[in-house]
Each structure stands twice: as C-alpha cells, then as structure tokens.
Image (cartoon, rainbow, N blue to C red):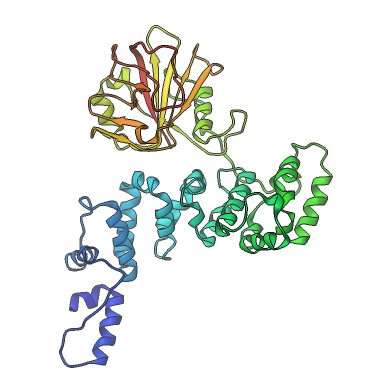
Length: 427
C-alpha cells in the first residue's frame, strides 16, 4: 500500500481521505469503475516494477492503459506510453485514427499524442472528414481541426463537410435546403454558430460563393453576409478570389517533383494521388504527399518472400508493375497493411489501374466493388488485388481477371511476365 501511495498522486489522495475517515487498521477499499481489471493489472506491474514491456500487448490495451494512467495521474507512464505509440504503432493509429484522435483530447496530459494527431490530420484530413464516424466528432475537436492554417484541404471542401456535420446533428433536417423553412435554417445556424467563424469565406471563388454559400445565407451572421455579398459582387471573373481579404491555408503539393522510380514519372504519381483523394483529374491536389520507395524487384528480388519481408505491415502503398515486352504499366493502391496470413482484406478505398504507351493520357481506373475481397494476403504471392491484379512473381504466373473491381484493366486475361515491380508508401 505504501508503494501505491507513493507512486500515484490519485491513489495518494484517495488513500489519505480514507485514512482520515477510518483509522481502524482495516484495509481501504478503492473503486475504479472506469478501469478494467486486466488494465489495472498492467498498471500495477508498472507501479511495483518501475518498468513496463509493451511488445506483447494489443495496441487497444495500450490505449486503455494510457487512459487509466491519466485517471491515476501517473505522468511518467503517460509520457512513456505516448512515446511508445508514436514510435511503434503508427500504422494501427492511422487505421483507427478517429478513435485515437478523440482519445488524445480527453486529457491535457496527452499533449504528445495531440501533437501527433494534429499534424497527421493537417496532412491527411480525409482521416477525419471521410471517417464513417465523422458525424460523432465533437464540436470542440472540429474547431481544433478547421482552425489549423496548415490543413491540406480546400476551403470549399471544409465548408461542405461542416454543413454535412451540422445536418448529421439534426437528422430531422433534410439534405435538400430548397425546402427549408425559417425554423430549419435557425436550427442549422444554432448548430454551426461556433464553427462558422473559423471558415475562411474569402478563400472561395466567386462561383463557389454563389453556388455553395449563398443558398445558406440565413445561417451566416448578418454583418459577415453583407460584407461577403459586397465583396463577391465586385468580382467579374467567376473563378477569381478577393485576394486582399483572403487568408489562404498553406496547401502543399507533392513534396518533390521527382520520383525514385524506374517505371513511372511525376505525372503518373500526381494522377494516382488525385485518385487516392477522389479528386477530379483537373483539380489541384489538396494534400501533401511523398512517394517513399519500399520495394524494387530488380534491386530486392522479384519474389513473394522478398515482397512480404519488406512490405508487410505497411499501409497506404501503391504497387507499380511494368509488363514485360509491352508498353503497359499496371498498379494498385492498398490503404491498409499487407500481410502473409492467407486472408482477404476489407476496404472500400482500394483501386487498381493501368497506363498504356507509358504516358498518362490513356489510363483505366477501376475501384473496388466487393470491398470484402479488395486484396489477397498470402505468402505465396506478391501484391494481389484478388484476381483483378494478381502478381505471383517475375515470370508468367501473373494475371488480371475482372471480378471484384469495377472494370478490367487489361484487354486480355492472358498471363504475363513482369519486367519491373515497385512498391511505394504514401507518406
């Protein structure tokens, strides 16, 4: 009991209070309803041992331990757990980002985790805005996101996401604003009143303002609306912005206009990134990315073993394949980790593609339609997107047979050999 009293300020306070209440030598009984018994066992190992090895624990249990450590005011353990997560569990945290982001703001003690999450969401805002749980994000968290000047997303997209969030908080409201009554607009206005000051309305083009903001004029503060209307009426070009009043976010493009590839060019990479962000091919990239080369067949060996040795447990990867004796380039994007465990992976964001004549003019983009069979993880094959793009190795065992993706990416189902294969991680 002495060690508990010494190591945890929370337990120190609680035990001291109990001691004052009854000084009869009977052991104190402390209730910790928010901490699971198995998590408290982990805490006890740390308190009594002074050290804690985390390599054998599930990441979800480490998160629970972090929350428990905060409740018990174990600052040293909090710092250790945050550092371990950031240094060793980034893939898991990215795949469960909306949960991790919410947790990071549950306590002011989680500053390192907050910093990690804030930087990541600025760089990859889709992790929040396109999350299936976006509507449950708190107003406080949403404000912290949209006030970030480095958020890699256009202002019009932010406005649309905020509107959708507001509608989700009021399911009785229709998504068709044309039938709104005054009370409907007031409901939406009250929901969004704390968020609207952080929207940079002067970053819109005249057309965006007319099409996307003007219909919702009733939810804007009157003085703001009057000034916006006056400003945009003075613009003659529908694609222009009021430069003197805009505060643009620091939108970046690909970090380098060169790419370490023997198969694709910067232009290929830029187009693939737009597909990842689901942008129109004429749109400007709204996220900052880097193609980090993980695997190259001619360097590392064109075999399933080498692919899995290097690429397993890496998420957000782009596979590039140069078909031997042709001008075809094939490829696929896998947002989740590769494994070697004889299993299918599930995601709605994977896609496969092909380029012809080595350029970007002729291409086929095919998104997954059966998300339960988006990729196939097997130690016996390389990066495979079901039978739609199945890469076995260097020689003639590779094939493209359309099944779980929108369309075939080759004009033939004949097997082919690989001249070169590369795998990049998008970071």
